[in-house]
Image 1 (tube, one colour):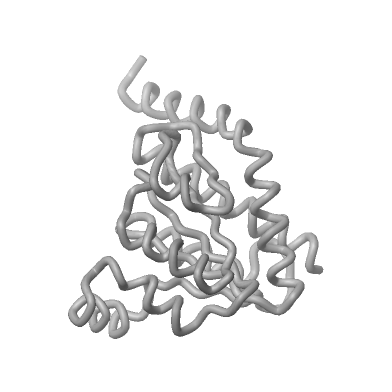
Image 2: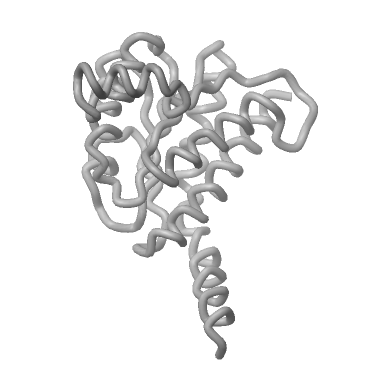
Length: 186
């Protein structure tokens, strides 16, 4: 098998196994849908590629996914460079998401924290701040048990330990969450 064939087979095998998290994805979709029905907001955060995923998923909720519909309130805590750099400078990088949540979130909102390892200190801190503000938390992580999966209300631990496969499945899960919410709200 060629290198490309092996890598694509690895991706296909990972996606075949993604069905194992269906129960957690349904539970997370219910929380997100209920939040949006009550007028709440969905927050997303993550670092590196997961920051890009947070922004991607925010756009799917704000714009449209598959249907023409009203904009759904979503905020990626990764996008305001002035806030991120000021908070990092004044309080430390571990505070960049939690400080924003403390100022923006209200009880009943939802935070989706994305971390391939599940151990990003700033995502974990955001989960703790969310809990203090009665914000529900959903962790998107890899297969291994982690700090994020231990503290989140719902942990979606996708079935891989390989960062590229984890990131690919995170987008698939995020798209599924958006599609379910979109179907229930239109």
